[in-house]
Each structure stands twice: as C-alpha cells, then as structure tokens.
Length: 460
Ligand SMILES: Nc1ncnc2c1ncn2[C@@H]1O[C@H](COP(=O)(O)OP(=O)(O)OP(=O)(O)O)[C@@H](O)[C@H]1O
Ligand SMILES: [Mg+2]
Image 1 (cartoon, rainbow, N blue to C red):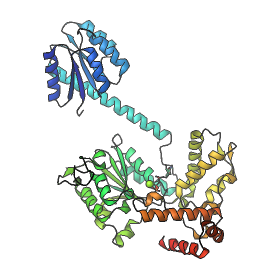
Image 2 (image 1 turned 135 degrees about the horizontal axis):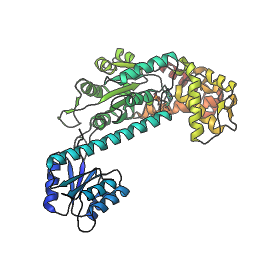
Image 3 (image 1 turned 120 degrees about the vertical axis):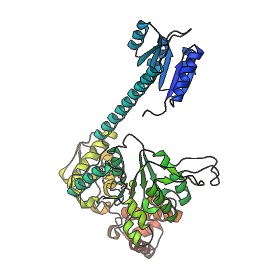
Image 4 (image 1 turned 135 degrees about the vertical axis):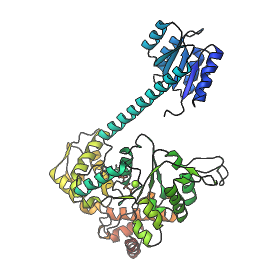
C-alpha cells in the first residue's frame, strides 16, 4: 500500500482541523496542523510534506493563494482543497490551479479516505515512473555490461534469468573483470530495482567492525557505541545487499552470515533481539572459494548457501572478441568526459589493443584508453598511444602484478607488502624489466630483489 505519509491539514477552525487530523493519524499517517496559510508555508519549508489538505476560506491567506504558492514553491506536494458545501465554483477554480482533488464540507470520512488514498497512490506511481525513466536513461548512456563473446552472452543470459528471482548469487572472477558492475546489473534487472542497492566491502573492515557494519549494534555494545545504529542489512531492506570480497570474512562473521542466509534473521551486535530482513544477497570474490573450502578456510555450508546461482566472469584474455566493442565504448565515454575530439582507433592501434595480456582485465583496458584519450592529439588514436606488450605486463618475465590496496585493507602488514610490491613492480616496469637497474634504483641488492620476486611468485 502507500505506507506512512506526512500530511499537512490547514484550517482556521480548530475542531475541523483536529477531527480530520486525528482520522488521518488513525489511518497511520503522520500529521501536521496549521491554522493559517502563512503558518502552513513555514511548515512546508522545514518538512517533507507529501500532501496538504486545506480549507478555502481562511483569514489572511486564502486556500487558493496557498495552493498557488505551493505550486510554485513545491510542485511535488499534492494539494486537496476543502470547500463549503455548494461552492462549486471555488472547487473548479482550485482544480484549474493544480489541486489534485477537492472535498466538500462537512467532510464525509469515507470520501476522505478514497480521495487521500487515490492522491497518494497517484504520487507513488508518478515517482515510480520517474525512477524507471531515470534508470532507462542511465542504461542508454553507459550503465551497461558489454560482451558479445559466446562466454559472456551465455553468462549474461543466465544472469538475466537469475535477476528475476531472489536467489543468492555468487560472482567470481579475477580483479577487474566486472564483478561489481554485474552485481549492480542484477539489481537493476530485478523486481527490486526501485529499492536500494547497498554494497559493503568485506575486506575493508576488521572482523568486529564488519559485524556491526552489517548487522548494526545497540548502544553500549562496545566502546564508542554511544547509540543504537542499524547496519547495512537494514539499509538494504526490500533491496539488494552486495557483499564484495566475501572470501575475506573471518570464521566468526561466516557463522553470522550463515544464520542470516538460512533464516533471514540476525541480531545487532550487543543484542539478543532477532530481526527479520527482506534482502536479496549478491556476493563476489576474486578468490577461489572452493579451494578455500578444501583448505578449511571457508565454511562449506556457507559456500553452498552463497552459490545458489554462480556466475563466473571470464578474464578478458579469454574473450578477446569483446575487446573492440569495449574499447569503442570506453573511447566514447572518455572523449565525452574529457571533451577530447578523439573518435576512433587506427588499425594498428586496435591490433595492439587486441594483443595485450590484460592481467588487470577490463579495468586495465579502461585505464589504457583513458590515458590515450587524455594524451591524444588527433581524431584517431595510434598504436604508439598505447603501452607495448612488455610495458603492459610490469615485471616482464616475473609476470607478477601487485594486489590492490583495497584487497588487503584492514591488514597493515598486508597493505605494506602490497605497497612494497607495487613500488617494485612499477620500478621494474620503468626499467623495462631490468632487475639490476631496478634494484640499484630501489637501494636493494639484486639478489634481495630476486628473493622478493621469487617469494611473491610462489605465493600466487
Ligand atoms: N562488461 C563490461 N562492460 C563495460 N564496462 C565494464 C564491464 N565490466 C567491467 N567494466 C568496467 O571495468 C571496471 C572494473 O569493473 P568492476 O569494478 O566491476 O570489477 P571487479 O571485478 O569488481 O574488480 P575488483 O575485483 O578489482 O573489485 C569498472 O570501471 C567497470 O565499469
Ligand atoms: Mg570489485
């Protein structure tokens, strides 16, 4: 139904105002009252009023004047006028000026209910329509998944079918393959598309904070919890909850999440209260969860609960057919964003794009094209505007890439190592893979550098 709305009742006659106000309250609405037009306008400025019910004849500002003011100040508020019995002309005048409907006094409660219900329903439909339009425009202007290769077409058609349901989805794929974009598309194609999409990066927070971020906490649950706070699960009510980097959650949070997925119930930190949630869950990870289950690092029961539908995004190097379309798409996007007159790629430029290794997948392709667009001096992008194969795979024969800091956030030693690794990879790339020059530049011995590279290679 319409849910609770804020309704402002304006009438100089107190009993009249009170009666109408209290019935509306009985029907579950929140009500504000004003005895005059000016007072009503003041309230409108400070409150998110949905509907105004106003008397026509009042001292000072008349109902008609109030209506006109509201139509210019806050055209989003619906106004219903209450006219004395027999004064049809005023009602007609009000409708001409944009009133949503009118009621004649003495107010008939059945009719009040019908009119208020209809006006609120109308508002809901208008808002829904506007949101849908926005969504359509967004998807026409770039918010979309590109991929015509067979693997991607198949994956996207499975995704579209899963989107229609509330089934939990697990998205896997290397870094930069589009996991988050796919999660958003699942939401946008789902019946929940008008509700919220709430994302949480599970790797970014230490265990205790993650639990309270997800499920909320009550006042006094831990030091610093000075008031009750709802979590992301509550924020995603009726919508979609996206659990990014799910492979990084601790055993404790795994247990809590399992309960939540099994029963759709959870307790805020520090409370025994069991709360219900109507939330669709989509999770993603770049880790191999199956291997983690085998190694005892991830609960098997949770794994199966998450993987009701599993969507594995292939790395870009395994679907090179998609590169031209993606490249054109990014070219158009960045040319527009940076106001550059770049329009296309030369044949050699496209050939080079097709041949790069793309360890960073679509994100890497996106970055390469962004840089080329910014630097381009002509309408056509040339092969020289792109990195060569060697430069594109920093570390040369080592074939390593540095993990993003986001992958290890919340783990200081891990972050420092990722940083160290990135600096070394960038230095190696700058020296075209020459280890002795890179080591000298970094103040390391060559064997020290080789040792680190060897360690990381084993770790991968
Ligand atoms: N199929 C696609 N079509 C167009 N753009 C895409 C597509 N897939 C990914 N992208 C773009 O590539 C970038 C990386 O995508 P996204 O952030 O979804 O990857 P991810 O798999 O979540 O990466 P990570 O594991 O590093 O978090 C984003 O800018 C996204 O918009
Ligand atoms: Mg991501």
